[in-house]
Length: 214
Ligand code: GLN
Image (cartoon, rainbow, N blue to C red; front, side, top):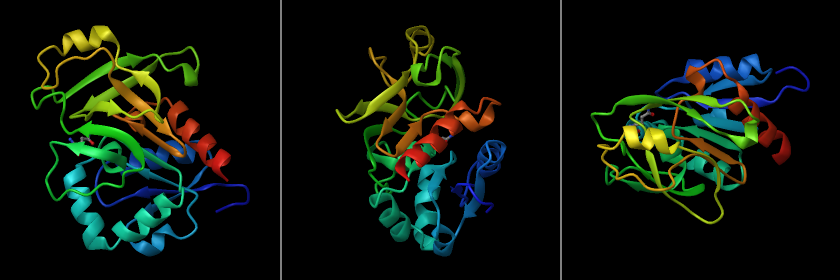
């Protein structure tokens, strides 16, 4: 770690670790893959990537990371969860495995594979006022649906109504509001995969949240 560099961990038990690492490195952060409890030492923020939340839950247990990571998150470690990472950070998981664990750091209910197994992936242009006027291109892959966002949750982007209509046969019936990017305190979550596009604004927002928390 060079002077002035922020140290960000990426949970690297499974899932799309490399792309997050690249995005954060491009923005000047020092990154570290987190596989064992020792890897948590000295982190100023952590990314929980996409992948399979049930598998990650099992691997968190077997690696011994579950408890120490939970402690750090409870103590306010800034976290950015994308897709499966959103599920891991949610207070409630719908359609999960009964033994699936989650950290409950953001007050949302996440329905796993909520767009239906048929609709494995889709893309959308999101209006994200917090990131400026240029829409954010978002890639959704067997994404969770945020079926509830609590009063303390700041919804930074919703799925546009037109996309909702295209997904009319999705498993979760369309609602007026479908949050896909949310923040609560030091925790940022997206239902989509920001690491798969060249747009670094969301990783930049997370780094500014880490700054603000420091
Ligand atoms: N469907 C996955 C899960 O439930 C999430 C998919 C993803 O991260 N791309 O964990």
